[in-house]
Image 1: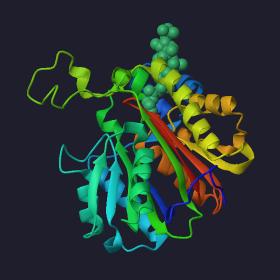
Image 2 (image 1 turned 45 degrees about the vertical axis):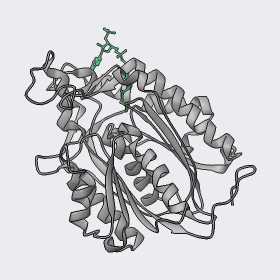
Image 3 (image 1 turned 90 degrees about the horizontal axis):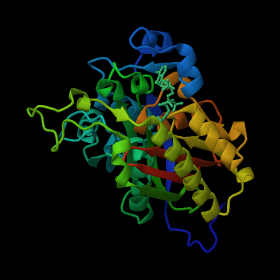
Length: 337
Ligand code: UT7
């Protein structure tokens, strides 16, 4: 059992008992993208590590993807949807302005007992969501919860902007969190941060209250995601390193103690640069961006699901989730799985 220096072990822990993911069947390769904008497979591969991304059809909405991932996670955990008490959907591409995407998931899976909400923290949303639900479980208020990251980013992608359209993909990942009272396994520690000063680095400006539907936009592209790639890149490396270091220091962890670091998948070069700075060996850093692109809040739970399914993460392993995204936002969770 790992224990932070001077830590009071909480009476309950939030344990991940089920995981699941779902991505649309339709894919777009780099060569396909090169037929839309002036780019190449070689440029995209060497600059980002991405080879292919999944694209939602009109019928594959965010709630649909989230529901499919949630069903798989519930089945894995052998938890009945009727026993779920909270559903959090982390997304920046919600089903509607309102109600929340989580409301649709609740309806689809029949989680009648749950209270539900969406969480808008961009790529950090899933990691933020885990830390919120962790509090409710640790203080004894909840027994069973679902945390889902789900995105249909290709629906707000500007397919004329080669600096951003190459990056994004659609998908969803989910985990079931359950209350355990043996104090050992579960989410051990979470750290969350934000910097609203840098909102301009990465955003999609319309249609909210600043640029409502019906008001003419000074720039019609404000309905799409816009990124300042270099700025995001540099901040991402710095903040991810800080968050993982804080987790390791807080828990007195050495690299040998860590089974796997599962980072938000935004660019393979960013993750490799982080790994180098933290002196993490390749086998302790999971990268699957080649097959999905950047799926924002969905990327960590999709990656975690793959790690569990392929045996790269096993029960008892220490896993660190870390994410960085628009806001700016960033955060990490240490989990004894
Ligand atoms: O999850 C958070 C969201 N993710 C991000 O915001 C991504 C973070 N940033 C990145 O991953 C990288 O900054 C990018 C992949 C977006 C860009 O890579 P880069 O190595 O930072 O390239 P750059 O922006 O410095 O551009 C280098 C060159 C430029 O040409 P010049 O000015 O050197 O002639 C760009 O015009 O590459 C050009 N370029 C492209 N060329 C071919 C930009 N996009 C493309 C493209 N294909 N798709």
